[in-house]
Image (tube, rainbow, N blue to C red; front, side, top):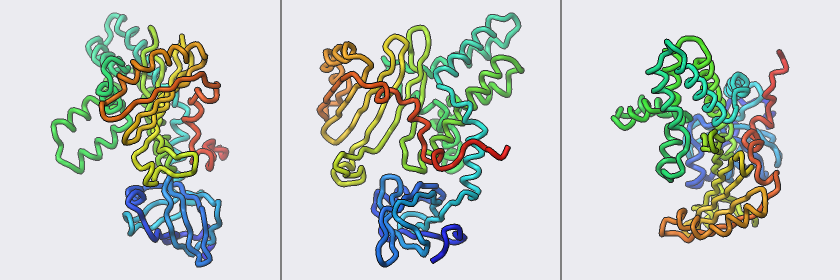
Amino acid sequence: MEPLASTASAALRPLVVSSDASSVLREGRILAAEVLQRTEEGQLVLALGRHRVPAETRLDLDPGQRFLVRVEGEGAGAALHLLGAGDPIVTQLLAALRRVVGEDRPVGELLRSLAAAMRAESARPGGALEELRSLLAVVEGQVLDPAKGTEGLLRLLGSAGLRYEALLLLATRTRLTSELLAGLRSNLKAELLGALERLPDGPVREAIARALGAMEAEQLLNLARHGAGEPTVWSFPFPDGATWATAHLFLTPRADEDGTGPGSEENRERNHLTLALRLSQLGALRADLVLSADVLSVRILVPTEELAARVRADAGLLAGRLGDGKRSVQVFARAGAAEEVEVEGRALDIRLLREHHLMDVQG
């Protein structure tokens, strides 16, 4: 068999690809793989994210081994190339993360600082008042208004800047519609990049550069998460009295306690969404929503039993607001330990970062 380090040609080739796994095996994607099983014939069963894929290889790989692969081809015709420590794609991703990961402060904090800098500059005679007023309105529009419900959240996530490059790529591959053009123009990252070029050096420009650095860090971290089948994270400012907190959304495919994976027939339509934030008066809060074809189950974790009792008393009202008339809604609330409620550390618990040194010790 070939040694693991010798992977100039396709190292693994999927044998049977389910429809679910086929959506993952797309040209150019980087995936985290783990060897689950090896047969006597030398075939493997791989875990690619949440999918199990039989594959053949001439490499000497044992159950439990983990590595990254790059997909060449599509679906059933795909080939998987192992990415070693010196692979240029992994090296470039790690290098990009090293440049910006120090900027990944909570987005609520960064945008609040940017808004404060713009207000201070607007009060100074001779400042670029019209430019600053327009940009300040854009930044303040990134704070979620709970009264606007689902539509407000979708608009916020769509314009938050994390999909800006994806929209640009779409614009080059499809007909540039007025809707797509409006989405590009109203994107927060586009607004900040434009302001960065137009505004003179000073506190506002520095605050914009910090905010852009944080966005790029989040984009790269999501790229690393995506390759390992880990939850994508969206962060956005949330009103917290006179200030802004940062809310985090995690979307995770659900696996049951009996080991049934999310790709199974039973769980195919289930997804697990986690919303977490810390408010100045209430502390850390977490809501886990599990959606299936018939039921929306909501579990709310709060820091104290007193607060949990208040949430339970309003469970009927909350269920009514969350219901869509098609599914029943179940709401549970309890006090949770700090390690259950806090999720800030989870946002950086990424497989790529665990398996590769982000700190460049050569310098």
